[in-house]
Structures are given as structure tokens and as C-alpha cells.
Image (cartoon, rainbow, N blue to C red; front, side, top):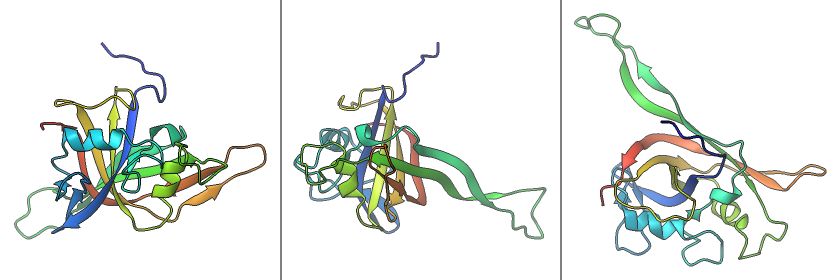
Length: 196
């Protein structure tokens, strides 16, 4: 039986700091000597970042839980994959090879009028996206409260992105916001079930 959910009621979105080793995105783990690959994120790593919701929280310069600052017009979804249809003399039929996974990662965030308020959840994504070319793995889970800790067996989606220039948005009578159109890097781990 399908269950209807209220918008924003059961989502968690984390920005996890990332870097690459031999072309494989790694999530930096502030509590360990090395990171973990995007293919094997751990419960401990995700729980570390779930608890970071404001700039005043320890570790907030690395990443954190930006769920409550995201406006409901966001897009974090897979799109049609890129393919090549080059054929050799031995190719049979209309074959195509998958080349890259494509996805959209666009988010608008509310921002606090006091941009130095370390207790404001709205300032965390503003701080984390204030420069271009910062690598993140955006982690998304559906069906659990935003600060509910994760456990083995839960399903998460992981998207490797880089920041672009954030665009401030404010107009008469509206809340202040910033828009971030992330640069997708074609690497994702979709429908990953946590094993450790």
C-alpha cells in the first residue's frame, strides 16, 4: 500500500564534503583518517552530518544537514542518461552504450537576515555554497524525519556535484534566498542500502 507524505515532512538532505581518488568520489570523514567512497557510505558518517544543522555546530565547515533551508522548488533527480551509438562493422542492430548518468541538482535556500547568526539553519547552506568548485556528495533520504539517525538497511541516494556561483534572490515583499545550480559530475549511487 502506498503512503501519502506531506511535502518536506519526511526528507533528509545532507551536504557531504567530497574529494576524488583516481576518479572515484570520496566522502571526507572528519572523525577518521581517511574518507569513504561514494559506493560505500557508512551509518556513522551519515549520522555525524545529520546532527549538523547550523553554522555553530562542530564540523559545520565540512558539511551538514541543510533540509530545512531548502525551498520546495528544488530538483534533485535523475534525467535521461547519455549514450553513444557508434557502431563497428560487427555491431548488430540499433545498439547504444551508456556513457554518463545525468541528473539535476538545483536548490534555492532561504537565508537569514543576519548572515553571521551561528544558530540559524538558513546560514548553513549559504556558508557551504559561497564559492564555486566546492565538491560535495548530496545525500538524500525519503521517509524519515530530517534529524532522525540512520541505520543499516535504510535506502539513500548519493549525487556527486560541484558548486557553481550561488545567485542571491530577493524582491519586494519576499524572503531573501540564494539559488545554487550544482554542476553534476555524472557519478551517483542511487537507491543505496546502507550495509555498515
